[in-house]
Length: 105
Image (cartoon, rainbow, N blue to C red; front, side, top):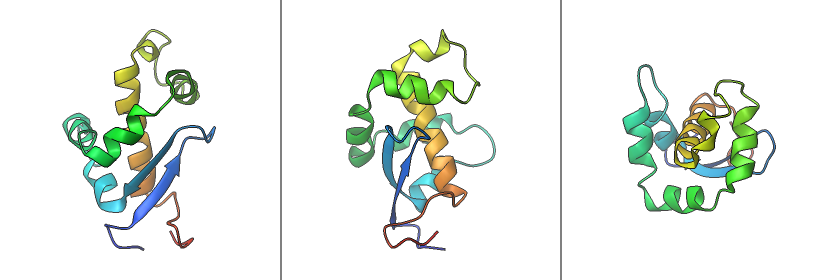
């Protein structure tokens, strides 16, 4: 496994929502219990905020709709969707679902 400060490039299943995040950052936003405050804090990091700000609202909504976890009304809130996707992608990185730039998990 890689060091916690190595950048991992995660993406949604559609490939249109991307996030470069370290394993250490991912671990802070993906753990047992409520992750809401930790995801919110992570989203304030400048390099994370810049990526999230670039996410297309409709691509994000479609990607999250695939999970079947949220109603269409819930998916109308872009800010909440951004937090949801950061949480999902952080969880995938923390679980080792993505490879780093060297191709190692």
